[in-house]
Image 1: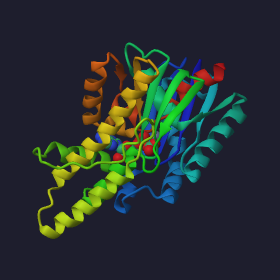
Image 2: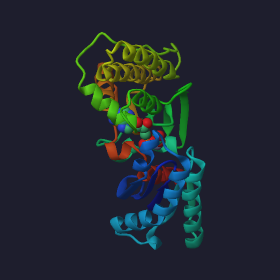
Image 3: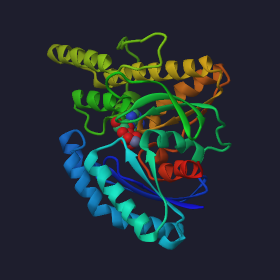
Image 4: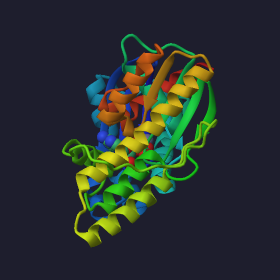
Length: 316
Ligand code: KG4
Ligand code: ZN
């Protein structure tokens, strides 16, 4: 069964064809990211206008790469939420029109759950269910117990900033640019070890996260250090990254242990972070928990994860 996925929740326009929820035949992504960078964050109006301009070409390219034609598509699928309303509207209207014109079903897919499907599309061997899922993106940070692809139970989520959002805000404080995640990661690599650490709220016994306290601690530290003329940006980036990653690692492993589940899948833009990958693998290894990260192209927003999860939703 060939499923076409459309993803337009934020600043990426994606179209992909996935066969039987397993095999990616094509995965096209166009991004308007560069147009937002001078503002230090995504401007919804610019994002939605770019979605409109790109979506048709994106679909055509994806079909061409897959070697299929529109009439070969059995089911259409689209990100229905969460996301920027203007951007979502473009993808939803576009997919509705396609499905209606071709008289084929249209499946609506939750963007966050789809991020957790990415490791199932890419890892060999594939993760098994039940699994614990950690989504770490620019807008969301949550832990799930995935019983089936149609049964996601939320265990906890961030009470304030998402992990990616915290990376972006701290990068802004440090004047590194946008998006902040890769820039913080790069800056942190150049840091010598220093006696610097930032503590966030621990929220013991819960699977919730909180990152705004760390961000504020960084802000106050930087203001003071700048005044004293001894601000070491690389050291701040390193200490901040360590603090966020520790919290993500600790809660994810704790969820696996509490639910007695040995499979841990990760998704979302922050899953591209190499320090998170290393620390999580090291910690999980101690408890024989298997960790599955998607390749970078499937960590950030894409339509293959939408079409992949849609297969299971359609079957149900
Ligand atoms: O999943 P995604 O592409 O979009 C959302 O659905 O939000 O995630 C984007 C987020 C941004 O906040 C970006 O700074 C972060 O992922 N990110 C990273 C890295 N690459 C992207 N964060 C930390 N380290 C990275 N290497
Ligand atoms: Zn996303």
